[in-house]
Length: 303
Image 1 (tube, rainbow, N blue to C red):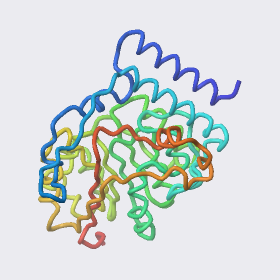
Image 2: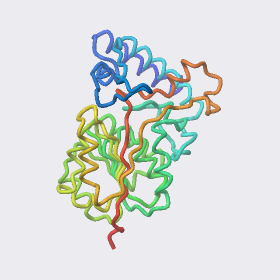
Image 3: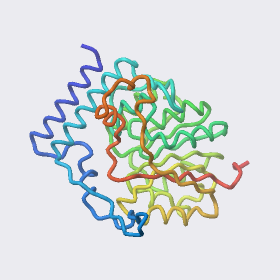
Image 4: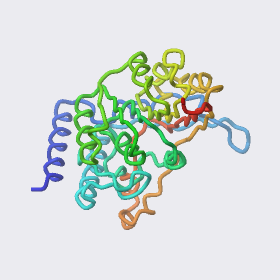
């Protein structure tokens, strides 16, 4: 039995155990938030009448079946690609058949968070001396950005011990272990000390709402010379985006990138799938339309 098949069977056993214990399956905590009223997302139709966005509740067991199906498809892709990313800015990245967050199949075929590809590509000629990935999960961005910036130090941070273990494996797969370090829980003071020796840092931040606390230039003065990509979890706190834009308005050029629809059929790997399988394959199970801020420092790298 291949390593991929064994990993798939382990994930199935874990999922069935969660269902048997009547625990929420992966992503259910976020999906439940679909039932909340979100007045700020509404708009008006062509007649001027208010439009209230639709929200639907999901049966956790239905969600579990969808996740299980998606994982099954991802494992087939992992086996056929030998866990090498096939497209996108991290093409050629060697991965593992384990994830702690997000979908393996989308990452391997280059669909995952596709909206960020242009920003990552645009900055590829910069001479970053350190990459700090806050909320690194299994290291998709830590190792992927490390691939694009081969001279940069890599710092990966995640509070989950399993995520850190998988991240270490991904870094090792790509020959990056010697220039990388992995940390658990961090605070602004420790990040500030971590950034101090470096002249041109790149930060990638995905920390489930903590970004409003973490990205504080008063607590971390070095942020003014950092280029930053941050996922905004406004469903945790509706003030996150406004707060970050206000904090970085003078020190950074700010671009907001909104989540867009995926076209799975543009990939030759998925071109023969039916509509349901194709849509499910690229589904990221997000609680609502998400967005990111791309913060480009106005200051030159420290001499």
